Image (cartoon, rainbow, N blue to C red):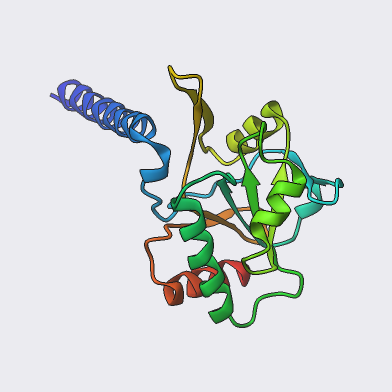
Length: 202
């Protein structure tokens, strides 16, 4: 009887794991822009990455050791979702009190063909100055996405054009280098501000 129960538990866990993987796969294929961004329930430490700032200098993940920050993915030719998210983030930062001096949220531009440092800097000029653009080559962007368990990929169209797909939401990393929260931009700015402040103060 014990062996039967153990076998049933193993089968149940396997089914749950398979269902979770299937749900994640379907969310990514349906379009990462619409992927839900739940709070992170387990401790996750981002992997290494290195990207370029608008001034051409390199930001290495090692530079962020002991520093709380936020990070999101997007691209400058995004028609509506990215600018809407950045607008919500700007409103949230205006409401966030008590953030550490020098607190930054990094916008990783995923279109390596069009998202030059100059283009990203001009794109972000309309938003809060604490949102800092980062760019890189295709391999560097892929490494950054992998570091956060995110999706960032190009999907070519039959007409010769292409679209960028990426994971939505804001990753909040605390001073211990742990992803403390992941915020959906469907939240109200006041709620986003609270979550940014909470993660920054952990």
